[in-house]
Amino acid sequence: MNTHTQSDTEVSWFFGRAVTARIRAKQAEQIYNYFRDTKNQVLIVGDLNCETEPFHGLRFLHPPGSIPLKKSTFYSTGEDLDHLACLTDRAEPRVLRCRIYDRPWSDHAPVSFLVDL
Image (cartoon, rainbow, N blue to C red; front, side, top):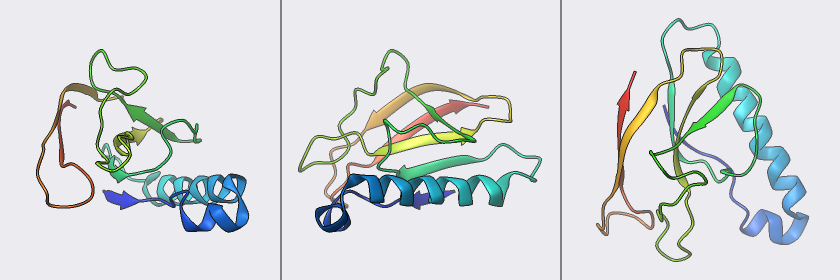
């Protein structure tokens, strides 16, 4: 599943980061609830904007040797925004490799994960 959760840009300028963090928590809850009954492993990928926020039901998968995350995927700020996550109630996949591509396809650097399911 590819998604993009609420960022801290315009909304947080007016309402503060607590509001955007609550929005992201609600989005994570919706993702978890949507997939909780499926038997297959679900990988959630994209600009999740929440690398430092713990969410019930979701676990971030990190490239080997990069905890905390050490990959720059957002060109203008150098932040690590493009992530890979999984549901916590399943066997946890392992990230074997992560590659960041320097391609001008978006304001985000394309990311490729090699995952052992």
